[in-house]
Image 1 (cartoon, rainbow, N blue to C red):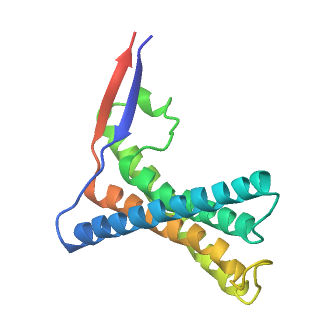
Image 2: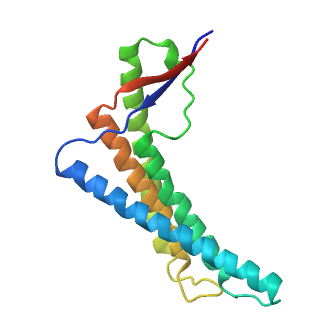
Length: 176
């Protein structure tokens, strides 16, 4: 029995759109690193103060959770860009190579449409909840929803790039 893994290579189309998307990726990566740093710092300080000095930071749980949400939803499009998310392609592997590429493009187009819909819905929900404030800080609870929309929108852009540029299908390995 032969098992073959098919993956989409990251595609960098020429022109301003590809450069803009790559620049946006660098920005998102920087923001992602900052949110992880905030999360680790705030949660570590909270644990040290709670167990070391029997004190607590009122806002630590909420800010730590907010940073966690931002880090998760900003990391998703970076995985989409690199083709790093898990895919089940048992049936796709049985098709001829020329059909695999077309099917991957069709799947990317379907996923892009879904991500655009998620982004639209997330931004609507964020706007509807914008006047509601968090319990411990004077910030909108909409900030918990904004990264869902941003992550979905950037994921959709990466998926559109895959559809347009035609990411090649490459066999990463096989086992017998």
